[in-house]
Structures are given as C-alpha cells and as structure tokens.
Length: 248
Image (cartoon, rainbow, N blue to C red; front, side, top):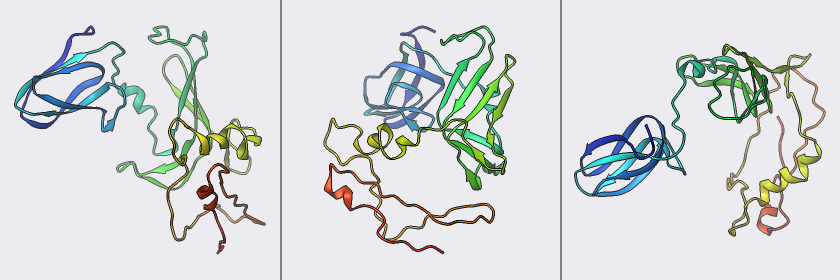
C-alpha cells in the first residue's frame, strides 16, 4: 500500500462514529462531504499526530467516508514479542525503552539481519500482579532502571540489580549533585517558559496527607529527611511544603 491509497471506506450515519483500523497508520486525510471533525487515537489514547488505529469522526449528514494513507511507517502489533514482555511476578514493566544493536551497532529501521539487542528501561515495576485482572498487588518496587538481553532467536533475559541484602538497586545512578540543583531540579519547576504559567508543580492542596513507607521487614530507622520544593521565581510556590508532621 502506498501513500494516497484508501485504507478503508465506510458508510456512516450522521453524528459521532468510531472507525477501527487493522493497524496503526499514518493518516494522510479523511474525506467525506459532510465531515465536521476527526479525532485520531491509538487504541483509546488521543494522538497529537495523525498516526492512529482508531478514528472518532463527526458527520453532519449520512455520508461515505474514505481514510487515506499518508507518508510514514505502518505499525502493527507483534503479538509473539508482546507476550515475551508479560509477567505476573518479578519484572513487570519499564517506563522508557532504549535499544542497542550489540551485533554491529547499526541504528536504523527495517533491519533484516538478526542481531543481539540490549534493552535499557527507565523506572521499572517489580512485584506481582493478578494473572486474570492484571491488577498490580502491593507492595510494588520501582528501581530507576533495569536491563534485558535479546539473542538472535528473540529470546529475552530480563535483569534486575539484586543486592546482597535482597533489595533491588539501580544498574546506574544519576550523580547526586543533580538531586537538588542542576538541570533535573531546574526543569521540574522552570520547564517551558514560552507562555506564562506557574510551572508543573502539583496543584493538589489537601488538608492533610499520609506518606506510607513500606520497609518490608523490621529495620532500624534513626531519621527521615523531608525537603520542601520551592521556586524563587514565584512567591505563591514558596508557600507550598510541609510545616509539621506526625510519625506513627
């Protein structure tokens, strides 16, 4: 199928209708005489781009609608590979995925030659989930990163950085100097100054809040350190923070 070809033609009644496609396509255009609006989605998530496998359209009158293919890559779900990432215990998901070709270092689409691949995941869920409902069961751990190795046959070996005391650590750590100063902290409160707004700090203003620490086993604790997060640029942000707390 080439750009400009019709992906799907449907006859629709007036009003809001949903059109499901058999893959994630770059949509070039949606054509109908009485079309008033189009929302592009991947599954149930609205997209800022025109890549979609689901369209929500609004028609002023009954009409015939054509979905036209645009330029780009067509994405389809790889069911066997998806199954290799599904677990109900242990490693159960990562936020952010980076892949590296360990065979020849090539970084490109449509690589036909089998290669060994390193996966680097960001914040990672570790724990157990209900196999039927998929609901995460507490406690759930979240190390900052984890790894996986895929051989040329597609077999995946997931790696967590287990410590001697049974806890899970990170494979690599950000320099602590960036915890309170530098680009990480700066971006949290000062990101995107193209328009005037108070930044991306939470607007949540509870009368009280509980912070629960799961220690998983008896541990001696001498102190907890809480640090308030302020921005010198805006006075109202300096009013946020913990004034007093109770421990029990």
